[in-house]
Amino acid sequence: MKILEADRGVFGPVALVAVLVVAAAYCQPESGASDYVQEEAAFEYDSTEFPGAKPWTSEDFADDSDDFQFAIVGDRGGGANPPGTFERTMEQLNWLQPEFVMSVGDYVEGYTSKPDVMKTQWDEFDAIVAELQMPFFFVRGNHDINTPITREAWTELRGPDYYYFKYKDVLFIALDTEGAEKSAAPELEADLPHFNDLNIDDPEAAQAFADEVDLMSRVMEIVAEEPPSIDFPEEQIEWFKKVLAENEDVRWTFVFLHQPAWNSPSESFREIDAAIQDRDFTFFAGHTPYYDYDLIDGHEYIPVASAGATIVADGPGNVDMLTWVTVTDDGPEIAGIALKGIFDRKGVDPEMFGAYDRAPGQGGVGH
Image (cartoon, rainbow, N blue to C red; front, side, top):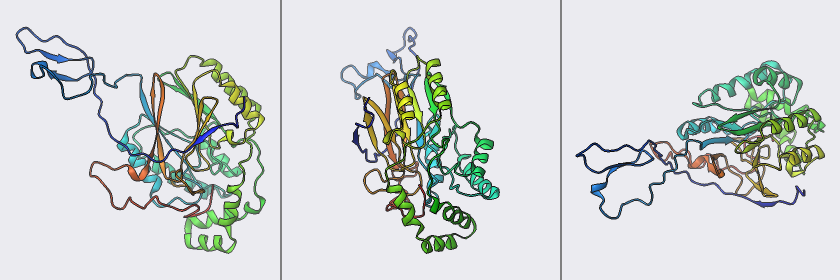
């Protein structure tokens, strides 16, 4: 398999149209009643009013009880976090009402050795997510578990490094790209934690420090480099194979991980990828954060865009957005929805326009 030979493209943001779908059953009208029609869907009309043509296209409603929708949000942590971006995303998700929300990591800034700072960051995030009216599922990102303190906090608050669940006979797997030892940027190990510690109480001092040590440029140089290969421990690979073997007949398999390991595949990722090739599946990742689309050997591998993290590249994938997935018997339908295109019932919010129009690197440091 040539995992690197991919057909690449980029989906731009799309607008959202709300559709109400209804459902019920057929019943026979009583004797003497008008010819009242109640089709397989809960769609009712008096047939005597429509002797000929009808002002609708079809009575085949999209009301399959096995279909469902879920949303995916991208990175929040990673420096920029324009005020209110992630909070607005949670509000918008409540308007849209997916059955649950998946994510791809980087929820907090991390990069701290102080337990009280880590607690403050997670308390802030948990308060935001608590506003959701549906479940939210986590995946470990590099900002979430980059020091011993942050790793301890993850275990205490979120539990295992990787896990799976099934919903309506669809398999969801959350993998960990942050467990293996990876080369760090030694010159940033002191400056990034100091910047983030300052940023808690004195954002102006933090920005002054970042300017003094040219932190943003140094981070962007690292971000622009070819992504490193992700080495998955043998224990996680064997666990992944076992989960697949125990769930062979699911309708579809979705795999979530923080870093898009297929961009520069290690031998261990090739082993993971080879294990899943005999079924229908889709991969989702974050980290970059820039919306992209890779079609590899007939399967979709999708890095989703940010929900407030630092924008690192210019182009149509440079957008704060969420990803909307509708699971059908024929597979998933996937749409990218720009946050600036979602309004509540009151209509257009003038303050929203321009709120997400950010140049690469604008607003902070991270990735």
